[in-house]
Length: 438
Image 1 (tube, rainbow, N blue to C red):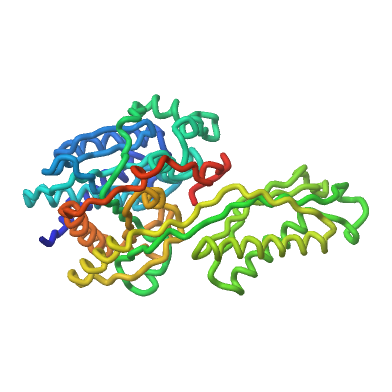
Image 2: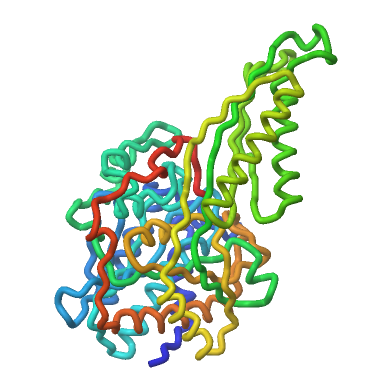
């Protein structure tokens, strides 16, 4: 059966979760940090909407919310859909929110058609996907997948020192460990692309083969300090000059080579006075590439480049490997289903690289998972001007709904990785407390 999204209702879902009382901004964006008062209102609203759709609500000890539509066959693993409601500050009205709205619309369409499915369908609102208030990112899905344990999660703090565990309790969303997702038949997430692959080619829907890996390093450059009016500039061993050269050289190497990206978003200078030559500079380096092997090669190449610059400037460096997000492939069977549905519906689709972390990355370590991207105007995201064209939204919602129905009707049973092995303590756990969403 082909499902056809209700445009008015889908717009209503989007408006509900971007209204002023849930953090909507005058400029058209949304500012809703995880576990804030705005997040509480949005969570309450999600629960109310899900209840009106006939779904049963439960909350786990990470604050993840599950809205379950029961299946007709007892004991079958569910199909998991959804995304997240938290945003950066200020953020857009589509990142995460679109995935929740499309999931709600999918269930509403099944209800409209009085369709039942053998498998349950669970819409999940994952806690702390952005990492904007409580780093690291993707906190709730990380607990479920075994990337970290609940003590680690509850002890994460924001800039004011507020703990996740205390914040969950304060807004009434500290649930039970027994409510966690433990297995699923398939997981599917819709999300805006946050890039220009679709917008640049005019395609509406992206089918994502995997999320690409990321490495974070802190580079500490040591020089010799002194008074700005003292000897020099010839012969100085200036940490800030060496650091500036390194930052530029990393960018230039990435541009020349293609295939990988470097970004520096954090620089700390000691002692930080206009009339003192800094003796230490620290900067955070984000490096991304298509595969783990390629990325490790680029990291080694960039560090060698930094060593050479440090020697030329008479400085020394220390490299701290802070965090790694390893790639997880998405399920080829679900990707094939998505391609088939898109072709049948004559939707303009494209295989789309996933450059940014999402909750589906963690889910892919547990069981069959896939993602659909929606075209984003000019690739803008994490900004109030974030925009997804309506035709692309409708196309994504249509493919998503048909795929969810097919997966929920699938009699073939699969066993998630979570049932086969104990939770893994991944490198993600070592994220620095100053980290933000990858």
